[in-house]
Image (cartoon, rainbow, N blue to C red; front, side, top):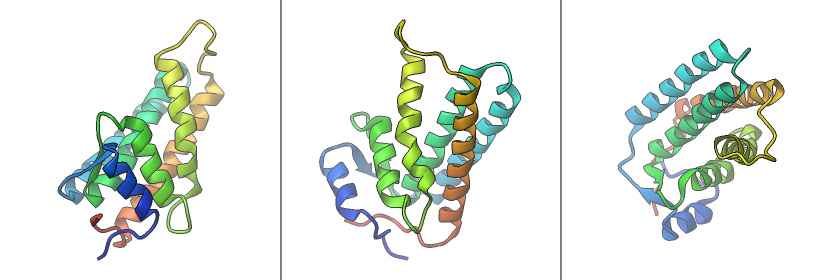
Amino acid sequence: MSSWPVARDKIINLITNGELEEIEPNPRFATRLVEEAQMHMKSVDAIADFDYPGAFQLGYDATRKACAALLASQGLRSTRDGGHIALADAVRVQFNGPHGSPAFLKIHGLRQSRAGSQYPRDSTPPITQDDANYCRETAQEIIAAVETILSSGKLGPFVI
């Protein structure tokens, strides 16, 4: 199994800039992250009808953990400097094409809405039921795509 060939230069750039770091590839940890994402989605389902901000937060966190699972499987993780943005960039550029899902293109929008909800200003619109439902649907799409990619046997360690 070789390194995932898509967006190699972008990933190397994220590593060089200190936004991603190399770690030991860890498929078991990747599996744990996907399982935690699935647990979060059960919680989203339990509160989606009355706690829209909470459902959105958990849906976003499920998305983030599923995406982190892809990187963990490759032997990558975002750094403190890179944070959620580097994670979103890394999965978007690698996995939104024909070998992944266009759902990965939605991560930055979710991240921005989540940040607005976590750190609101008086002008920040509240998270609505529609927002929470969109996040839930997107998280489900992304988790399913992550499971497909991880089970495909095509995602190996990232090698510089």
